[in-house]
Amino acid sequence: MKKTNFYIETLGCKVNQYESDGIAADLEARGMVRSGTREGSDLCIINTCAVTSKAGMQSRQAIRKLIRENPDAKIVVTGCHAQTDPEQIREIRDVDHIVCHKDKGKIARAIAKDCSASDCSASNCSTPGCKECGNAPAFSFKKPDHSGHIPFLNFDKPVSGTMTRAYLKIQDGCNAFCTYCIVPYARGGSVSMPRAKVLDHIGGLAAKGFKEVIITGIHTGMYGLDLTPPTSLADLIRDLDAQKQVERVRISSIEPGELSQDLIDLARPGHILCDHFHIPLQSGDDDVLQRMKRPYSTAEFASVIHNIHATLPHAGIGLDVLIGFPGETDAQFENTYELVKRLPVSYLHVFPFSPRKGTPAFHFNPKVPSDIIKERCARMRSLDREKRKAFIASNRGKTLRALVQHQEDKQSGMLKAVTANYLTILVDKKQDLKGKIVDLVYEQCDSDLNIIGKLLTN
Image (cartoon, rainbow, N blue to C red; front, side):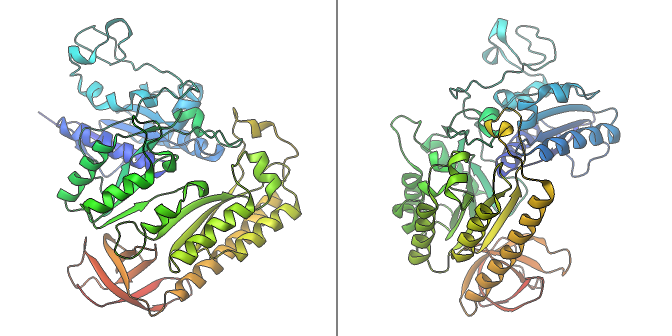
């Protein structure tokens, strides 16, 4: 009997990638085979993104492309765009199922049609093909209420994925409701994975040979506040540091107000936490921050960055910067540019403002013209290059601990190694280094900021 061949396409954030890998593992556990190519699949799942209008458009384009390339396949659409704009998805012909966040964990069971009585809640069962209630093969669709009652999506076994570094989603949802952000409307309020389950999954990933785990979430710094008894991200990292089941833990992103001194200290030498923090700034102007509903001032943000740098002089510090928020004047943009220029940060992620229907900022005026946004983004990306170059130079002569990836650099054919402070260094692939943590220094850096490293130990 031919096994079902499935393909999953993921758009958007690390949380989406984690969930896609979890769904894939569930399908594989039921005897299905994951395909690395788009064409010829029996089942195509697309995990969509809604963080910007462009991301939503790209999600719909990807759905249509999958349908064209796999006209006989079952098409399942899930993710944030499916959650916030299901009507737009329903307009696409040949989509078989739209699956809300609440039902993501049911996809594998539903496709395999092995729903048992314990899964069924009779009249309101939403599992396709349920043997208990005879439900028709269609998922329910429920939008999250704003009180946040979407349960945390757990996978029974650790999600390993296909990368050298594993992701572990420990938190989901957000309570902040920044005026430009659609994510709380898509994922509901903040919920956390229980501490014991986090430790269990970390242990499972260590047993599979992973040296580094990236802790991720939608609002990761809110971890544990909804649990009983409440706990915190710092408490969790402290537990992981005490157990040291893996060699490195990295936080994917964290808000400035949640970077306590305790947490920063856990990234000192000898501890498990990587000295790398990715922190959303969004704007370097206080008035814009207030209209964004961001809970800090520029002075408070700068204090956090300087504190990290004073404690960990070689830490990698990345910022998210949102350009062209409605009403952003030339002077307010210059405030952002000058603040970032002064701060000891190592790289920037620069985003143009994207109006999202359903958020307060969608109605804010005046709109910043697109050509001005483009010009400001270009200036900020030039500053990003300056920051990256300066950070690389600051690490010259320093012994760096780096995890060698399984993936090769396409241009050079060398192996990529990621340092604790988030530099990517290219190393010779002659030795069997994949998946190992090594000591190295870099020998040269070319005009494209590609760093060539010299191995010190293996």
